[in-house]
Image 1 (cartoon, one colour):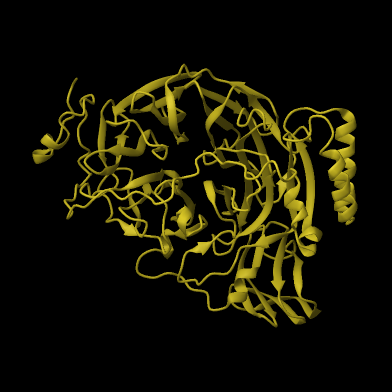
Image 2 (cartoon, rainbow, N blue to C red):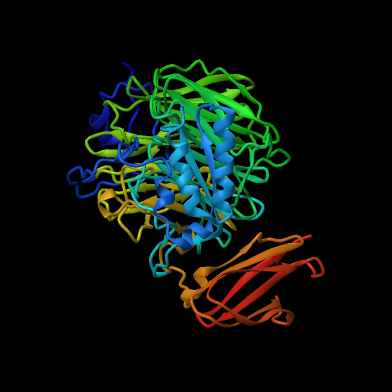
Length: 599
């Protein structure tokens, strides 16, 4: 086999790798650390979620254990993964009406009967829209933001809307011991606070992967599912409003949409042309089937019609990632994955044909947590991946638009083990990466322009970080980047959020804890925005609006309120475009939110 081209004394280290000739990226600096031993996480990753106690509880068990307040807040829908009779569909709609009307005891009695009907057990799931989104728990602002109280997370995804700058995070978890679930989590203030708007799952539901992205006016999640007898044989899609994070129906009026059914789906990924000026009109779905075939479909979000593009790929094993190549010349979409021959492969789509761009050998049979991450911008294609050297490495391949590919090190210290990277090239801000360091105490962020030298790695995590679940890094607006990461299962398996402008010398702090319970959406606003807040005590609430110069623009309310969840509509139609400040004074504290009005 041909040998990798290397620099200086590194020739001996990797001269037997057997990769095709490829030069070292001149911008990649290799550090020679003090060395050490490989550090493996103490709890294996739950790559495929296993239902717990399926013989003991029905699919709606998660409803049975809700508190009365949670039941009042839960607007439910019952869905079947495989078709059922019209009689069963009608009965399910009656149960929904009963529950959503407030007769929870009667609804649960009806659920008992539904579960005995043919084709229901092991086939039904419950979706819950929270009438008032569930706020994430408070945490010290010196620490990263806990986006949800859900634990035992085994997969996560995040995206950012380029117009509203709202953030969305999907997490798949088994933390309550009731089968697989996912939740939609929403932030309208750059990740300062998060709220859960929706959850889907069932006691016998098994989901092994999900992914999510924004396009047009919605945030989409693709996930695996299937009946208990054939789990992960189906790929499903659901969408949420960009402005509020609340669930929306599909264009045909259904709650969810089944993209395809096959023998078994091992990995899913979705991407879009959301950032492409003049487009923002295509959604792309990808999956790895158990035989190694990669399937690819595209869709216009105004329809439920999916068109398949044959990839010709049948050697995929894991680690699938895809992206839209912004302002491309040759390849509009790009993908990377690990093959069953222990290599990373990179493909680009030209028209309706997928073309192999590069193959790079990674030495050993991949562990289940090995993955790839890819991004494209102006024909610069960048892919980070797990590599098994003397120590675990995070390497990358990069192409600057010509015929030459280079390799380099996203994690520059090759004398310790580093793990599990994600990258993004969005936001016209260069290449940004996140990866786990040699221990659970170290996770790093690093960036550079689309070419040129790298920044020094900066530790971003204030909590332990997993090396077995890929973090998510995304552009979050105003030249900043956000990272969503999971702590190890031994620490609880919860998810935290951090930003590049919170990392390093100074972390932003919020003096008032009450501010965590105040949100504003949509923001920016055209005509109307909704101010949502939670109070723990009864008492006087005053809400005032000020312009950018600090002048009083409006008294929105001043009166007594009971403790609980509240919302106030802000009519922006008669206000000039610009920056405003909404001041909320309650018995729990005072908070000021920035609101932008656009025309």
